[in-house]
Length: 159
Image 1 (tube, rainbow, N blue to C red):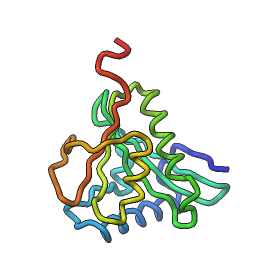
Image 2 (cartoon, rainbow, N blue to C red):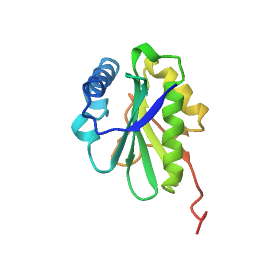
Image 3 (cartoon, rainbow, N blue to C red):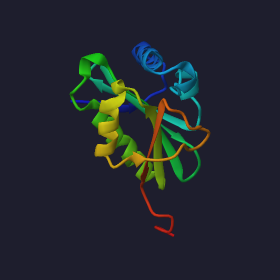
Image 4 (cartoon, one colour):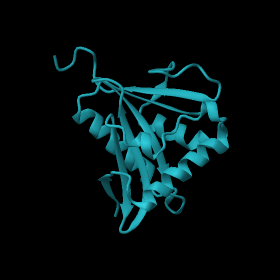
């Protein structure tokens, strides 16, 4: 049974998974195309970070960065190696989507890589309804980046 916790990134296992995530991104993408956040940047007040645990074992992580009051960005998705193919990533995406809905966001976007190692990520995001889009926020067009978005609520909905 997995438990999702809002996390302050102080646990050594969480810091190690963030470091593993950063190194994994740099293995697949050139540095100028790697937009993963380090521990310091994940502590930004605009970012909510979650860790996923099975008992005392860290299973994964994910974050939601508020770009503005209507638009959020899914960040720092990573499953710990011992927990791959056990539904952790799906659980994190569902949790972030629930949080985005609860915060009345209208759109959730993400940036990921284009290399073959990102294929499982693309499949996961498509499964949850994300579609390809143009660069958003401060991102620029980049052949090593794939941009995806999901409309959560219509512009006039709830007014």
